[in-house]
Length: 434
Image 1 (cartoon, helix red, strand yellow):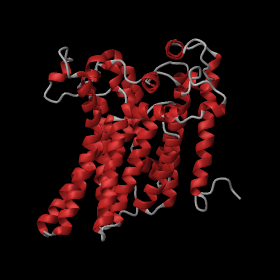
Image 2 (image 1 turned 135 degrees about the vertical axis):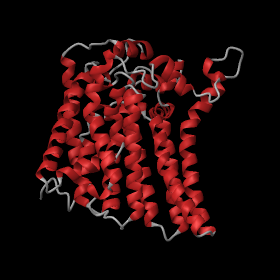
Image 3 (image 1 turned 180 degrees about the horizontal axis):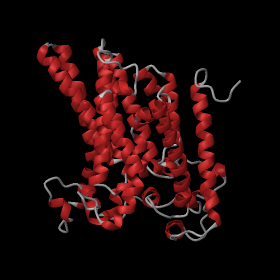
Image 4 (image 1 turned 180 degrees about the vertical axis):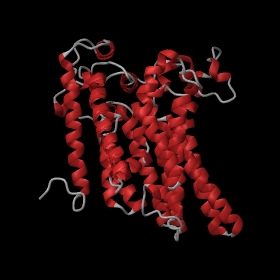
């Protein structure tokens, strides 16, 4: 029996490939320990938060880098400094809660002297990544009925250029998992188009999961575009044929969209209640929309429209350019004609699915453009892991009969593997890019 069989045991095969890829990346990370760190922030962090006698595993030492320090600190002691609100309160809260469930007595470890939070964060990241791979397979099979395309697209998500960021205690893996599950539920709602209740439950549940994804990463707010488009479609249907069923169909995407807005707004409300009740108010408290997230991003991280457009940032734009080119090219092509990648979505058939795929392509393109104009552009190399359309497009290239398209797909796979490997070594040594 073949170990890799996309027809008879696709999920088992994907799990095996996932395990092999993770072993490869973790070997790179641990191998990087033969040299000194470029930055000593990790060792200083562990000494000050856990004590100099704390037991720190090599894995936690190598993967608690860059933003992971903020996540681990918040998971251990909560949000202490204002700038920490740039990072997901939900991710650190989840890790903190799960750490509290670790049976330290049974494991023979001292919770006060053992670095647990980063290890729990690493476990959450890897489990979330595996679940997102399996969910992407089911989502693609549902939308296209092409299990071969689903298998290849899922492999591409495994070897995503996000690399070790999907294994480290970051929020990217959890965001991808929640986004893919939410998209699958959204697509499933079209399968229930003859049952108003089932369709409504799927849409509202999808909105709730997208709302959770926005709690983990603010770019999840862009997924509201799916619900806005669906609400417009249902509004047109209601105008053409008024009735209770069409009214409920309109209500469901509106409720789902409100969940997404709530997912972004919830941390802002919590912060407002904490910082904006007293005499010494922070500057953002007086704004029309008092968002601590946008203030912290601007004030501490210099995030804003064209703020990253400086000569010294040119290398980072060049570094991000391959992923940006893939996201924008695939997004525009699929937006114009979904059947260019998903062959079974021929014009005139599966119109709701075609609309969904186009909305996903528009969302992906929007995030890529925001990365160019507003974000620290290099983060797109890891944010991209949470969007499905480019995986479909690259998989379509790999499976195409056209030699030119196949060569493009192969070149992308080579880039994925090389970038993830090199980035993993740099990340584990606390070297940029982050």
